[in-house]
Image 1 (cartoon, one colour):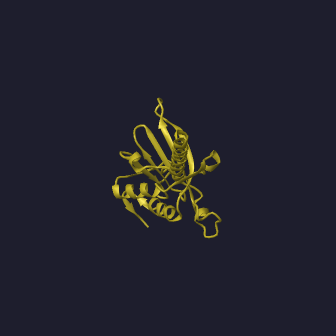
Image 2 (image 1 turned 180 degrees about the vertical axis):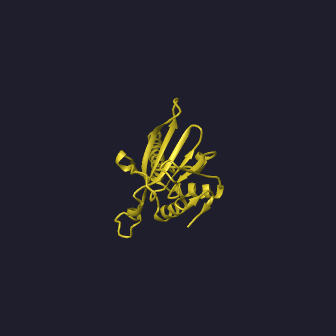
Image 3 (image 1 turned 90 degrees about the vertical axis):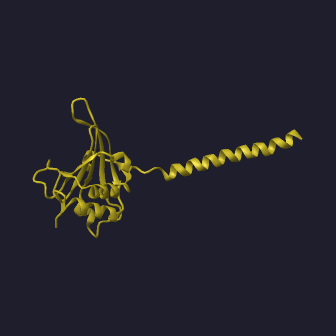
Length: 175
């Protein structure tokens, strides 16, 4: 009788292990979001766009509704691949970027090759890329790159983000 009891117990134990593995794999496949809004609480936002007079010129965003809309659009970013030095195009007025910064950390979200990515005939127009770089403060007062990724944004989020960044001037949308 004891042998007969062992088979169902073993079967149930194996089934439980398989089920646990399936649940674990299912949650790993879904994965967590790459970026989380709460991680940016307290960060200041700075935009560089066509209205900045020099490559280092930045405009601080003080309007929380615009700050919130820009950050929300970037939450849909999905990592595509780590970026390389070849991915960092020269700063031009056609490629806006913004920075989220606090005392110890800085994130830079960069559009690059924007004109090409927005072209109707561009083969990858349905998967536009932005570069997101995370840097942490170092003892000398500068920043060290922790990671840098090319990320895919949904085309509608990419276009909306571009339309928020490019015409921003001192709290107003121009153009």
